[in-house]
Structure formats: C-alpha cells, structure tokens
Amino acid sequence: MNYYRYRPAQPLAAFVNQFWLYEGFDQDHLKERVLPTGTAELVINLQSDHFRIYDPQNPAFSRSFRGSLAVGPHSEYFVIDTASQSAVMGVAFKPGGAFPFFKYPAFELRDRHMALEDLWGRAAQEVREGLMAAPTPAAKFATFERMLLRQLVRPLELRPAVNYALGEFKNSPAFTTVSGMAERTGYSAKRFMQLFNEEVGLTPKLYWRVQRFQATLRRLHRGEAVNWSDLAARLGYFDQAHFNHDFQAFSGLNPATYLSRRGPHQNHVPLP
Image (tube, rainbow, N blue to C red; front, side):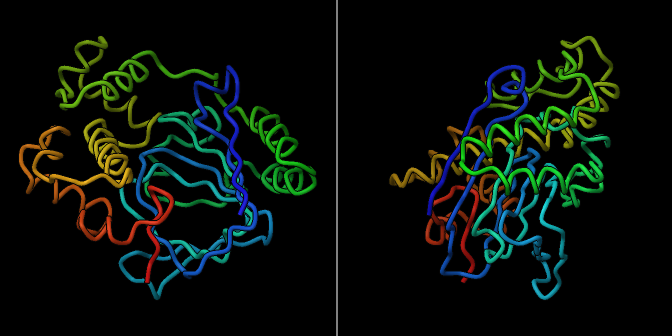
C-alpha cells in the first residue's frame, strides 16, 4: 500500500486539513466502522465508479453511490465496504472548511453521504476524470487543488464569530456555555448557534463533544497503558461513567473493545 498526503498553502490551508491518496489499499476484512470527526470530507474512488455505505444499526441495509462522494460532518459512526477503498483519494476539510464549497448549509449534510454530483453537477465527474488521468501523486494533488478552487460558491472565509468559537473549543478542555460564547462574539445565543450550525454542521456543544471524543482516540491510539479514570479526568469528563457513555454513543464500542479491534488508522475500526 502507498499512502500520500499533501497540505495546501494559503488560502486553502485555512479550510483544508489535507488532501490524501491511497493506492493498493487491499484489506483482509470486508467492512470498517468509520468514527465521527465532526468535519466534512470529499472521497473519490479512482478504481471503480462505486461506493457502498452500510446502515450501522442494520448492516443488511446499504446505499450505493457513484464514485465521487461528499461526506457531511458526522456525529455518529457509519460502516463502509473496504472493496471500494483500494485506490481512493480525498479532501479532509477543517471544521467548517467545506462551507465555501457546498451550496447547502453544513447542517443539511450532517450525518449524511451525498453524491458529489448533487452538489457540483457535471463538475463532479470532471474532477474524478481529471484525477484518474493525472499520472503521479503530485499531479493528482495539483489537479484536485485547482479543481476544488473552481467550486467556490461563497467567499473563502469563515464568519469571525464561528472562527473565534472554533479556536476556543480547540484550546479549552471544558465546555463553555453557548450563551457565554455568544456573548463574547457579540451575538445572541440563538443567532450564534444558527451561524455555527450553518458553517460547521453541528451544534456547538455536540461539536465540542465530538472533538473531545477525537482527543480520546488520539490518546488511545498511541498504544500506551491507560488508566481510564485518569484519562476521563484529564479530558474534562465529570466521571468515568460519562466518559464511557460518550465513547459508546460516538463509536458503538466501549473503550476496551476499541483498543482490542483498532487498526492502523485512528478512525477506522475493522469489523470481524
């Protein structure tokens, strides 16, 4: 397997975490549980024009999509078919980073997958064809970056209130109240929540909970010995019961099961 990634320069750097590319990604399991990050992503299948996403509550039910997919900001896990992941490329947006490129408010894509052609029309297929034709990883990244910039539907900026809130959530181990955050941004609580939901796709408190879950995964994925009660306290949970509840709610697994099943990627858990 070959894995490549590319971090763009400004102005995209403020909105895109990275472009990524997998080649020869053959798995020994058929399905993977993908854990929520609270951010959006674009995923392009470079091998076959097909993706299959399974209902996590009813694995017998699945949806099929063409090979260019928009993944909205998730607060719950979903299940993918690994057969469609052997040659795949994507854009991982930063929180709120997809907003300038999608014609819908971010909350309309929350916990959803959408065919990219439903957002970009014919341009979605042109992106896929351009990526498949590019001969090298560097050429593919350059092509994707250029084509992404063509799809801007809004100014390449976040509202200052949302940008400020994202910074505060990143740096604070404890959740501040929505009213307190709104007061510091100069908006009413109702208007602040509306703006945050439009650009990020989750409510402020739900977004913060997902980011705390992600902080948990980063610590667990290091493979170090874990003291569960100490970890819960350091991450700002009231007690270990609240920690376990959040972990189960976002992953469908308890923390110990995650540790025993985790694969090489923090947010992908192989299914038996």
